[in-house]
Length: 135
Image 1 (spheres, one colour):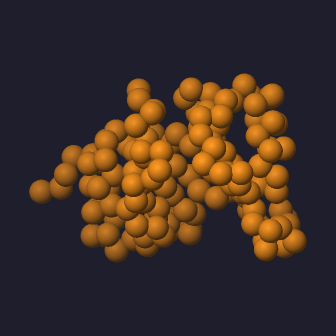
Image 2 (tube, one colour; image 1 turned 135 degrees about the vertical axis):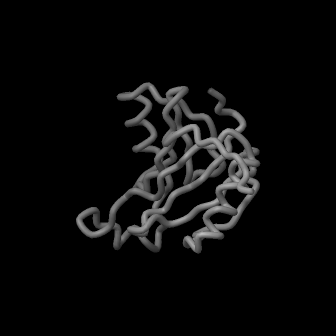
Image 3 (cartoon, one colour; image 1 turned 90 degrees about the horizontal axis):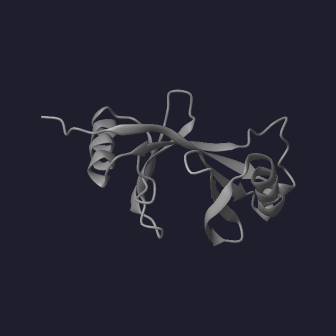
């Protein structure tokens, strides 16, 4: 019997950016987003309290080739789950269906828990439990 799981919805996007600080200021000033976590200088997580945006610095190796006409800046879509058990249940369902797992289950430094998979068009989706986001 399949585990019951609950999706809380599409709650975050992650963008690849040329300059994290410039992009951070843009989203703070125009959309009143606040930093909720910055694990290192190349990554920052912003929120309005409901909507969440991750900004990931393009690596120095990629920067010279980072041409928006050829590379889409969307890193991944993030679907929020109501519990770690829901993440596990969806992981089990995805593997049973033979879907492509991009990154396996992982407990993150901020207490969140997730895995990544590909949709049929190779878009990356993060399935995430984030304890600091509750509805």
